Image 1: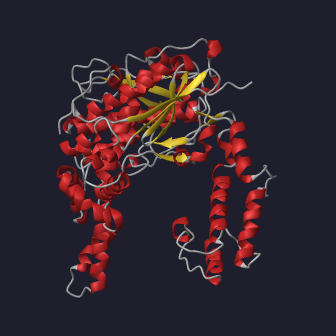
Image 2: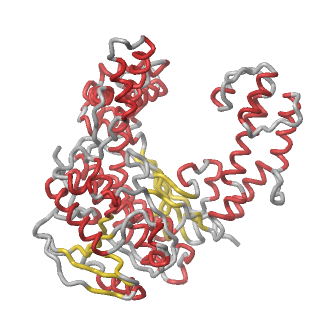
Image 3: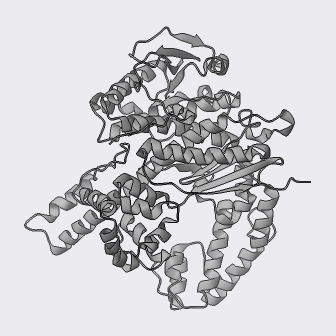
Amino acid sequence: MRLHPCPRRGLRALTVPGASAGDAVPWIVVGAIGDGVALVPVAADGSRGDTTRLDRRDFADRVRRTEGTARWVWSDTTAWYPALLAGGVRVARCHDLRLAHAILRDSARAVAADRLRSATEWDAAASVVDDGPSALFDIDPGTREVPHDLDSALAEFERQREVIAASAAGLRLLVAAESVGALVATEMHAAGVPWDAEVHDGILTGLLGPREPAGRLPARIEALGAEVRALLGDPGVSLDSQPKLLRALHRVGVAAASTSKWELREYDHPVIAPLLEYKRLMRLFTANGWAWRDEWAPDGRFRPVYVPGGVVTGRWASSGGGALQMPRQLRPAVRADPGWSLVVADVAQLEPRVLAAMSRDAALADSARDTDLYEGIVSRGVVSTRSEAKFALLGAMYGATTGDSGRLVPALRRAYPRAMGLVDDAARVGEEGGVVSTWLGRSSPPPSPGWRALQGSAGDPEATEADRTRARRAARDRGRFTRNFVVQGTAAEWALAWLGDLRARLAALPLVDEVDAAPRSGPLHARQAHLAFFLHDEVIVHTPAAHAALAAEAVSLAADAATRLLFGDIPLDFRLDLQVRIDAAKE
């Protein structure tokens, strides 16, 4: 794989240890020492400078004065960065040891990683801390999942430098992008998504009825519940208990095996429509109702907790607030502050475009150029309708073998052999128990011991046909996983590069006067355009209205730069649906 780094300004944030031996800017390793903080500069050749000890109250000020002349190395961005943000200090570049360890430990492309893999104290899940300026120091060290002391950080950084120096450029870039993603996630939590409580209340009231005292359901849910119970002939049945609800449904002739909406829709019975509506509104009430707003958006900002790399493919997860499951009906509550605007952008067909770029399938790239990719497939005569194109391509990436997807995939194989060959090869490797990797080098987990035992038992002379059937099913399931892993994981890498470049571009935009500031976004972001939300292939930028055009341009330029950074100068664009929303100021 050959990388083509883009010289644009924003991508300078994606620097990695050892990437340039001639780079004189040192890394500064940060670690706790006693009740304070210690800083140790590490040069490109690995040599260390003198240790500087600081009182914890002086840490933010030192970073402010040093920022721009160093790059920071620390155990976990969620532990160190919130204290800096609370003081209005922005860090342009960092190296997150926890996130980097997870990537390097598991990557099949990591070279000479035995020492790193033996450092099991760094095998930790994501950790989230409070936002206070002394968050790191107020936490009992026994509750932390990775070590924060200076000696541990120095030792782990040395191990990671050895692996990074010996490994391919893609893996080095992935570690850098993941670390920048951690900065973005922490900044977005601090800035928050602008949230209008009145709009939210209006949506809830319109759908559910007025807010009731704690312990009581809204009127609309109560009415639907009574209607459902009457149709079931059971006034006391719990509609929120699946076993009890299923028994009640069976008694009236609805032989559903689950209460999922997809299965219930298959039945023609008067109870189905009000039951589905009850479930929909109950989900809204419990997941994003008034109690949710009181907890997660009490001050005009929704502040979710993002978890970079929280999904095995590298996609982000959320450990609080449900940012990645925000229902569309609540989107109107995302409302810019007076005098500010929202720049909203999402990538059209991100994963299919990534597949075209990875496979260098010229025909698929041509179908996606300057148009809706699915419409492009139709225009080439591969299938008849846009919906067929969508079903077929998603089916190819997710391993669908039945229904419309399974019927249409052969036509894609004929039209786009390189793209289909890439995912078919990934599926074959998975079915055989192998490991696949994304474009930059994040690797899929190996099969579990149970999976291997199942495959091994199927080959025994005494194995039954049921044993062999279970083994084949498990192999196909794993093949479907690895088939999608390479595409979804590479799409996550593209999104990280997009975020990293966009973050740097926004930080270079002008500041507005204090009178036009948005103080609820925090000291770092109150006067400047900034990222407010991210969901896989979508970003929301909160920007002063006067700079909305500049912010929108930054979003587009960052997408172009991310494409070139990962895939070079390919004849393929990653199309954005980009809108600027100017919300009327409140009276």
